Structure formats: C-alpha cells, structure tokens
Image (cartoon, rainbow, N blue to C red; front, top):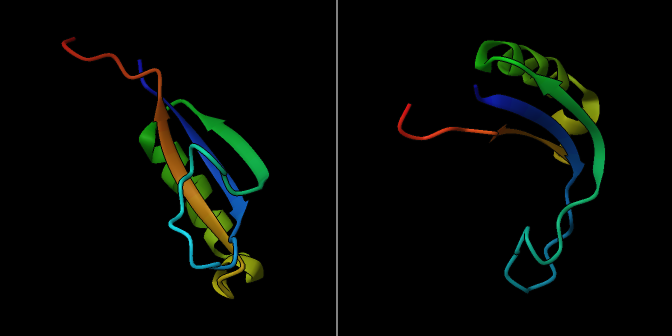
Length: 71
C-alpha cells in the first residue's frame, strides 16, 4: 500500500547554486500523512489556500512513500 506525505516547506531564496533537496532540503513547516492520493490532494489543496503559499514564500509537496512495485 502506498502512503503519501503532504509537506509544507519554506521556499529558499535563489543563491546562484543549483538546488539539491538531498544535500540541503528546504525547511519543513508541516508534515501530514495520508493513506490515499485523493486524501493527500485534498490536504494539499487546503495548504495551497494559505496566504504564504499563494505569495510564493512557501510550497506544498505531495510525496509517495512505501510504494511497492510489481504488485
């Protein structure tokens, strides 16, 4: 079963260096788990209505975790 994380992060200013989320991930503000993609999309939609997201200072990411291939 695939679970999903909905992550609200701060947007880093562009400093001329290529962004690498593995080396320097953006600061997380909120992390919420969801058991289905539909639920994750609804949570992400609620986050996208926030003023800081609409102003471009924060971003919303939906990440699939625990995905099983070949089933």
